Each structure stands twice: as structure tokens, then as C-alpha cells.
Image 1: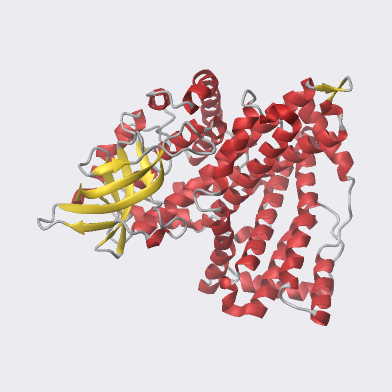
Image 2: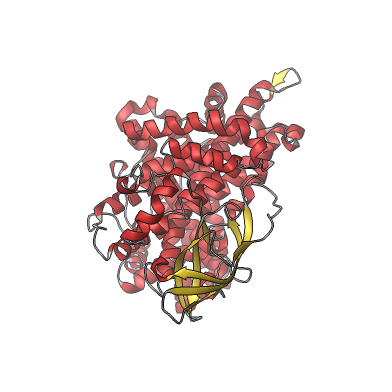
Length: 584
């Protein structure tokens, strides 16, 4: 673990192309799971999505069982419990590919991700033996019950209670959960409740428990085929053996499972974004106006290029983070009685990166599906075209696994708390930047310089905001949100460029030209967003001559040699149109 990069350290030091994982690094096992997923979805899921969304009785369970037969459900489960025990890269591939499958993606993720990982990471031997084999085959469907009518983002304010029975054999649960995916067909619920009203804890609850009931199916904007219901607990008896991890440590389970969940949501979003671009590129090639394919129109080219560049950045981020998580989990000895704590500490190290990519990828998806509908014109509003479903289904990803607003607050908060503990030399980096600025910052001439500029602007804005607000900075949500965006863009810029550089080293510059073009477009696009976010932070901190000085310093950090972005977009769009899909 000591040799692995610290979470958030990308802001303070330059990574090398060889230090990150990229999709071009897939091993044979990764390619095999990728092809298995593509084939399964093409043959079994996509042809039946209309039936899925119509909630055809038994179909969702049938599809999950078929996925189980292919080993898709057991990717994260050890072999001794019937799982495939694949690495985190395989899990990321599965999450990405299934992301385009709408309602099935939610059922799959609720079952295999947040539904089973609490047991995989925090369950004891008896719990794993009792539940994991049936999860692998979908003999039993899992669900994750955290959200309550009065507690969403503030999960620890949950009202569901657990009281130890007089004979000490059961916890008796009373309360309600809401918006629970898979609730209508779940056989196993991971439920969070407060023992004696104050010790937030996790439990494994059997779906057929007496006193457990579910409400009616929610009528939703999108993801119409996934089951979403409220779950009610009326004196539900849960064997004491089904307490998960430790009493009063439910937050350790919940938050770390959400960290992994955010990573998988980001991967889902990338998969859906790719399908939106594929559909749009094909449509633009076929649709003619004024006897010309609309793919040849400049403004359509801009849309295709921007979609491609942002998807490329998001894809680069999720596999970089997947590589970090994979290396971390494989570096840990989780075999002992403290395996849960060891796992939690390892996952938590990259909680920041999981939040970064979840926010970014879900917003890239929102952009991609919106532009996809626009490219389709009126047909994009018609249910016959897949982009209409993609548009509706995308909206929820900016809400679940922690809203993007909550995650934006978490990013700088996590950084500052780690700095306060001495785990991350953030303040030292701010001081070092100020010393460099005193000597003069040269004009940024290339992509590496621009990535450093993004990191410098984050440190500069953070230093100025902390100087103004001190510890109260953690209460300034508007500033925290903009600091988060600066960190997100820096991570995306660096991830996409390192991937392109790694490809160039392996395949030559011509072989990696399209990747480099997409990375460069994203980098230069991001600079304008970075400048605006930083200015808004600084304008909230000072007026008059003090503001003029801060603005001058910001300008010095963002001096760069411009390039022709219109020409670059045309070049990227030409590649996308020629392929008729997202291409790297």
C-alpha cells in the first residue's frame, strides 16, 4: 500500500503515462469479459428492452439468471463462494458495458454492486457462505436499503430502528426505506438501522421475513423497467448472526460501498454515453438535408467532436481509477478477522477519485444524450429511437450514489481534512506555488504545461479561499463546488493526456493521433471553464484593488498559446463519422 499513490495526490505531483491504467492495457481476461458482455447484451438484453420497460412478469429475473450462467454476476465474489473473483478492471468493464442497457443496468448494479459488496467486503465467513453462492446464480436477488423518506444525502439521520430482543437472538427492525432498487423482486436486503436509536448499523435481512413488506412500484421518468419501491419493516426479526460487520459501524459499510458504487455509476454513464454517440453518428451519416448528410454540417461536426472528447476523458478517468482501486485491493491482506477494516481503509483512499469521476461521467452522459437528441431532431423525441430512452434514463445518475452536489462538497472537504491530518501536503503545495509565482510563470506552451496550469489554479484558488475564510471554508458550499470542478477538470485533463501519451509511446504518434486530438480538445475546452470557475471564487473573496491583484495573478497562471479548436473538432468528427461510432 505504501508504494501506491495517495488519493488526491494527482493535484500535487505529475503522474507518468506508464503509471496509469488505460483501456489499451486490457489483458486477455479483460478482452474476454468485454466480448462476453457485448454478446450477452446484444443477444439477450437489447432486443428485449421494450419488454423490460413494460415490466414483463419475470423477465428481469430471467435475464439476471442468464447473466449468472455466464459468470457476469460473480465478478467481485471469491471463487470459494461460486464467484469468478475477477479483478476491478473486469468489474469496471462489466459496469461500463451494462450502462447502456437502461433498466437492466439498474437491476444488475443493485444486485451485483451495492447489493452484494457489503457481504463480500464486510461479511463474516458464515454470512458469505450463506448468501454469496445464491447471489452468483441470481437464485436470490439482492437490494440495498439505505435511503429513507426523510434522509437521502444525510444517511446518518435514518430513523429505522433495531432493538435487541429479550432473548438476545434477534434484532427487531421498525421503519421504512424508499426508492429501493430491486425491491419488488429482492430476496436479500442490505438494511441500515440504528440499534437502540443511535448505533447506525448494517444488517442482512431476508426478503421473506415476517413483517417486511413493499409498497407499489414507483412511476418514474426513466428506467421504467427496474423495480423501485418503498420497503417497510414492522417488527421484523433479524437473527443476530445477520448483523453485518459491527454494531455502530454501519457508516463504514455504507460509505465505502457508496465509494465503489460511485465508480461503477461512472462506468455505467460512460457506457450509455458511448451508445448515444454511436446512435448519433450513424443517424448523422444517414440523415440528409439539402441532399447532404448532416454529418457534413459544421455544427453537427462540433457536436460529435465534443461528445467524443468528453467521453474519452470520462473513459480515461474511470479506467485510471479502476487501476488504482485494483492495485489497492490486491495489495491488502483481507484474510484475517480485521479484513473489513482493512478493506474499508483501502477503498477510502480513493474515495476522492470515485467522487470526481461520478460527477464528471454523469454530466458527460447528460451532455451526450442531450446532444444526441438534438442531432436526431424531431426523431430524437420519438420512442422508436434509442436516444429517447437514453435521454430519460440518464437523468437519475446525477442523483443517486450521492447527488453531484454532495460529491462536489466531498471533494475539497476530503482534501482539506487529509491535509489537516498530515496525509496530503496540500498547504505546502500552495506555499510552493506562491513562491513560483513570485519568480514569474512562463506562458504555457503544451498539454503538459496546461495540465500543470489547471493544478496551479486549483491550489491558487484554494489558498486564497482558505486565507479569507479559514476553517469556515468548509461551510462555503458555492466555493467548494467550484474548487471541486477545478479538481475534476485537472483529473480529466491529465487522465486523457497520459492515456494518449501512453498510446503514442506504444503505437507511434500517428497511431495515437485521434486519441491525442480528443485529449487536446478536452484540455483546451476545460481551460475556459477553469478560468470562469476560478474567477467566480476570487470575486467572492475580494473587491477593488485586492480583486484586481487576484485577477492579475490568475491571468498569469493561465497564459497559454491558443490552437485552432474549430479545425481540431472537424478532424475528430471526421474520424467519428467515418467509423459511425465512438472510436479510439
